[in-house]
Image (tube, rainbow, N blue to C red):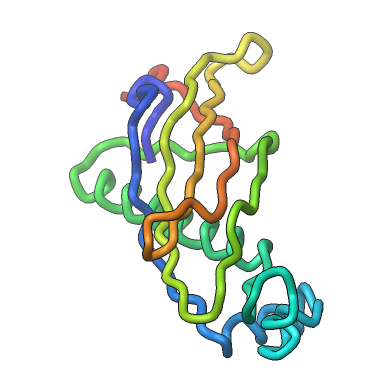
Length: 160
């Protein structure tokens, strides 16, 4: 992971993609969002979605998994180069969560993260806050999901 000083507004990370199959949509929905249009193809077709739709929380959970995997990969590469690895703090929250288009069975969603702001904190010495816009698009290039996330990020300080 990167330190606050290494992060610049506009930096973009492509996090990967995921295909939402009917089986996976239903499996997630049974456990976490058991609404008919997530559980049954016919109910999905009759809904405003027009087909079996993935839960927005499923879309978000996949994005989080890809974000964490990318961060772990970056950390492993930095460690292999003998560089110090920044251990990020928790997220103080997110804003502007939007499910823009339905994700239907068979859709492949690509996830990306772009830094929107970087600042040191006045109340937590050695830390800063990074805000990043997370955007997901379907195979047709249409935005389906977005939100603005915040994370506490350590400053390099004396660890370099």
